[in-house]
Amino acid sequence: MKKIQEGISLAPWTREEMSLPSKGMNILSVSNLGKRMRGQSLFSSLTFGLEDNEKVGIVGKNGSGKSTLLKILSSLEKEDEGTLSFKNNLKIAYLAQNTTYGKDATIRSFLYEDNNADVQILAAYRKNRDMHLLEVINREDLWAIERRYEGMLKEFRLSKDLDTPMDRLSGGEVKKVALARSFSLGAELMLFDEPTNHLDIRTIEILEKKLAEMKAALILVTHDRHILSAVTNVIFELDGTRFYRHVGTFESYLENRAERRRLYEREMERKENILRRELEWLKREPKARTGKDKGRKERAYALMEEVKREKIEEKGNFESNARRLGKKILEIKGVSKSYGERTLFKDFSFSFNKGMHIGLIGDNGSGKSTLLDMIAGRLLPDEGAIEKGENTEISYFDQIGKHINGNETVLSYMKDIKENVDYGGKLISIEKFLNIFSFPSEMFQTEIGSLSGGERRRLELISSLITGPNMLLLDEPTNDLDLETMENLEDFITSFPGVVLLTSHDRTFLDITTDFLFVIDEDSISFWPYTYTEWKEMRDEKEKSEKERREKKDKETRAKREKKGLTFKEKKEMELLEKEIAELEQEVKSIEDYFSSGSYSDLGEKERRYEEVKTLLEEKSNRYLDLLEKEG
Image (cartoon, rainbow, N blue to C red; front, side, top):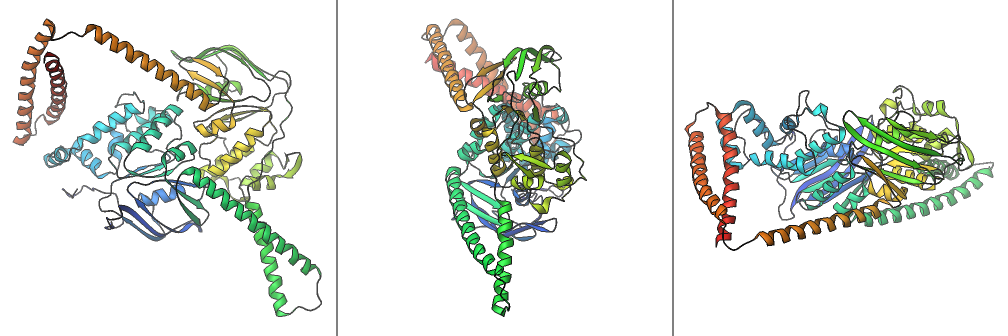
């Protein structure tokens, strides 16, 4: 689309767009891209292309630059080096990890805050009612964006009024609105940064289906392995300053990564053998060193530093040393909880047994966090009681996070909790413990306020585990965690001998870490002795059977009522429809003549009536055709 009026920006790009070869269906080319943060290289020499049918998943440790890369591709940040080339007039939709909106934004007005060129035209028209803009909107059918937006809100199960202020929505509802906007823009390239955060599993399943079916190209940052497996056909791995591009499924990427790690371990073993020989040579301390010997000595010390550094970066095996549980662990006796007139759950009872690992699932706002708060003793039930065993020690990792002094350093914060940690039956220093969970020594003096969201989340996680609890409550522990940290957490939970109760929207994580489920549905909590996937298969089969039963019943009902020809009532309806359709067609023509006249009076009301009449005309025409077919 060409620029139609001064003052209206039809594209957010600050860099020059370039024509790319069309024969390869290439829509984006990146060459030697680099970015520095806090004086250090975040990534460098990133070179890749993107075709219009590719769906890319980006994985890597927190702080490796995944979100920054998306911001550069969406022109929200500037690269330090390298070049980017986009297909001319490429339409891009960017979904940020954290959604922002204007002070007085509503669900309706949130759409117009996007920088998309077509949305800017709609926003400008809504503001000044310029007839030239209306011509463009009608010619390009930009009203379709608004229709798609409202349709997507319903598809993501958001039933709020469009004039609801954004600041009255929950985190999950805000994410649904942001997703609806992104999908409504008709973009050719979607850039999504952690789209599953704050969503319930049902909505994630809808999102996964949309991503898999959409025709646009996709670059996706997510820790949701189920979505990576079902949606992506290319994986980008950011690993420090290194960049790997893997063409294929997420499963084949994991196999490739495992092979790379095996080769890395073999190389580490080779270096250690060389180092062992060099250390023996150094110990012999010959009386005189030649120049050649001096070089060998320097290389030996350099190898020592390299092996030391690489060993620190290796992932450790996290074993728990939980305190022994008593005979009585924790009993929930007939608890109920309501807020105002809304009942979250009522009369729920349960007694935990040793070794139980339970997943807690339910829609957003169903009461998952409320139940965890009550078990942790932070919130009292309206009815019933929760009785904790004498030896039960609870550690609660919640969604909100701890209030930590941002000026405190990583090491001092952890040392204030514990200087030595009982780790797998051995007492190790807190420094070693930090190393195991990907906090190298160069980060020890980093102020907590300078950490990335994922790094801070990881610090909160490990600080909640070092007291030796025997009952873990984890509320969405995978939010903002990278894949490697999630694997560490999964290793810890699966080997944890105590009781675990966790809520997570990550279906793979649930399957790996839990054996049972609490399901909150409407106002009740039910217990299921199944994994999430087993429970979902039963749920889907039940819903399928119920749908088939309803369809069969409806078909039988229609068959009983169906008669040849029209009833007397239907004939009268058909006569009335003929008259109503003629009147509506005349009204459509009249409003269109009004638009062509250039009159600006009462324009808003005319537009609303025009859309209303067209909808009525379509409904009545369809009904008339149905009757006509039946008559035939």
